[in-house]
Length: 399
Image (cartoon, rainbow, N blue to C red; front, top):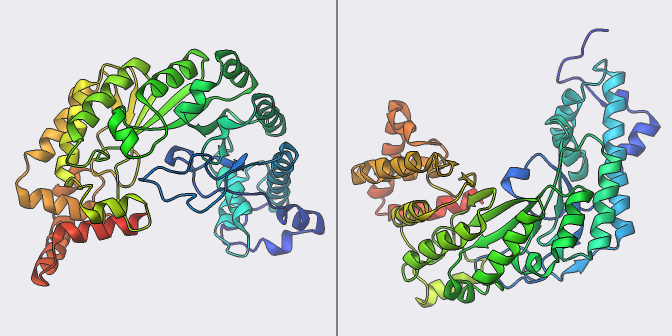
């Protein structure tokens, strides 16, 4: 049977049973880690139980809720029904077991809701991972979380990875036995918003964790055999606490030695609480070059076997990444290369990065892109615009 083109109409293929499956719905939370972009999203809790962090705009004004387990299991069944509907369409269109093509079609058709789009994206990229939302699923009672993970694994036997968000404070309060039970049930990775290891900065940002919490929670997760991903926020210390932020963050990470350290640079906009402190002059932002220097201090002081990732769109130097300690010098050389550029070249790169033309320093050697960015910078200057402020506005559009 000939394979239909990618733009083929799906609607004639929809029987009543398939339509019913695609009309199933399940709850979706607002965010997930960048590395979980292609994961099946299952909302286990609603919002954030802490919700006081000065640098975060997500969940503000929303009440935290523990979802009933029965609701979560029904959502998993709904996701399963949608995936089965897509598989039926694939067979009817002559794709056999290749669901990728059908998933691509459905994900690009606006008449289908977010649930279908999420399942389509997940299936279209292999259907191998699932992420439990929202901000701190670890706060669930351990037996209930085990029930959810077990049912998820039983329902989707192709899953190779199940992950979730957690807080250091919550991980520290879990017993090692509980964390091992979660590992045995099929929880593979926990993403933790580490931010900083400097206690005065943790208190200033109202993080609700301490360096001691970070170490205790992180080492316990590692000991349980669960992969640990710690998110560090360059720039969080502002001009006042930058050095301490870098030093103490490295020190605490050295005590934990997580599997992954992910950089997620601070960005302050009017919708986050820290904006008020910025306007009052109590908090002063660093320049992007200062943040790059701070990252260098962090890396210089790391004594870990972690994989350093720079996979957030707000980071300036996305290519600063690699396995520690093997790639430490390479990462520092990239930073040195950037900082040694003439001021105008650094400005060109910053603007080019923020308008989406550059993904690495190699982009500067592309004469077409370089000239295009240079013209944009000159237009800003001709209008009397502050180019650094313009870069901040461009970063706002990224989020």
